Amino acid sequence: MEATVFSPAVIIICSLFVLVAFGMAIGIGWWLRGRKVSETTRDDSVHTREALARLQELTRVVAADVGQHSSRVKEISNELVAKSDDESSDEAVLDTISQIIQANETMQQQLVSAEEKLKEQEQQIENHAAEARTDALTELANRRAFDRDLQQQFALWRRHDTTFSLMMIDVDHFKNFNDTYGHQAGDEVLRGVARQLQSCMREMDLVARYGGEEFAVIFPGSNLIEAKQAAERARKAIHASVFDFEGTKLQVTVSEGIAQVSPGEDMELLVKRADDAMYAAKQGGRNASYYHEDGACHPVIEPVVKTPAEPVVDEPVVETPPTEPANELVDKTPTASPKEESQDEAATSRIDTLTGLPNQATFIEEMRRRVAEWQRYGSPLSLMFIHVDDLPKIEDCHGKATSAIVLRTVTQFLQAAMREMDLVARYEEDCFSILLPGTRLQDAVGVAERLRIAIARCVLKSDGQELAFTTSIGVGEALTGDDLETLTEKASLGVRLSSEAGGNCTHAHDGRASNCITPSMESA
Image 1 (spheres, one colour):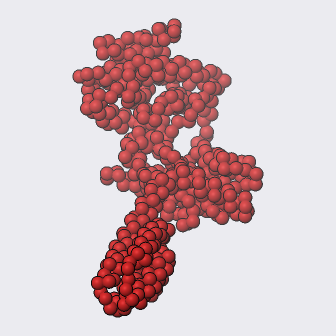
Image 2: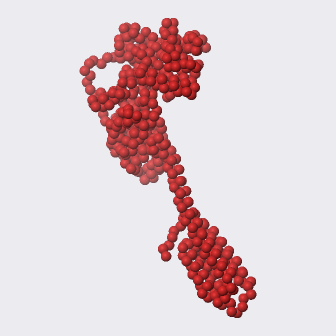
Image 3: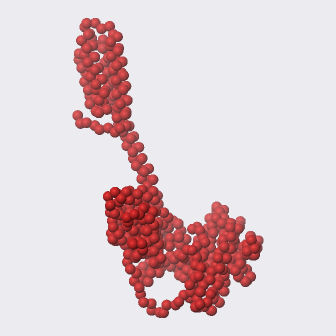
């Protein structure tokens, strides 16, 4: 008979059966010893004791081969029947042996059932382990799996000097993308980027979602040259991909940073070097791959420098720039092909080309959706208009290029101050709009005043002259009975009254009237 190998759980069950069978055998032995047997049954009793001895021996090894044990017990039963002349004298013994056989068969069924349950539990454990290491949205490895794999790569590198490289990837302009198309479209793009990354990498590489719109790839056994080649494959594949969401064709680009592990560094330093290279790619124009080596970041592909057809205008320099750069949704790379430009046409029509912010049509569309949600669920909603004071005068005195710099500077202040959920847009030529979900009027007024004061302190320099500029702000909150037009009128009235008051102030609409709140804020 072919031997069967059982799992530890099955062996434990078998061991319990062995103990039970061994106890039954001892009990039968004591029963036989206490019997008053005649001479005619003495030989049968000897054979019975021998059979019981063999049964005891078999029960000791039942864990090794349950099937063989069952067959052997049946043979013992047949032997007892054949050797018994007096059926009644051994009736109890035979009945006991029959019960042991039946118990053994039952046990075998239980072992099969236990083995099946054990397999189910093992599968459940594997599934839970996979879920714990997998990002639910993209189905890539999650941050926990990434950290663990990176630790293992460092251990191998330190023990066997097995090199590896790391790449960090960030989707360009993703916040503006979400603001323009919605979070569901953003999720679909993240899934598409994940698929492209996975398809461009080797099976041994670990592709992970590092967090938000950021991804990471670990290249085991790869040097910097090999990692740069893989990075460029992935970047080009993502740039060429078109993601379909509810009939809208979407495209994004990514910025990538690569670093190869170096002597004397730890995990944190390697991740930082790859991060630094990724941010260098963003500063270099995005849709690019940079690598970190010898303490500096370098482009994988050197950018092509073109001689401008017209003289370059010396633009003003911001003396106190905001802490965060302005986001741009459309990549204005001069080498873009006509095909790529046509694919971005839908996105461009929703974006203001000067500031890179959503335009008025996009803002109103999103505002209509947010107002509907407010009417349904009652979550606070505030609206803010920010008007750049005397922008036509600035353009007349300093030129169109300077007025454009003023608008882009205000854009930077607005984006730096707003939360991820807020929507910033260029509403008109000299006016911006901000939608603040979940924000009461008092909190919105505080944000407006901080913005107004910060912008007023900013000084630009152009042709040796200093240029200061201010803003007029109007704020309104959606109240019972309001709709999109009513909320817009509240904020519009406030910004008009602020401008008529001489600018550089804020008016807030409390539901009855629009009141100037700047003096009280400044005196406080």
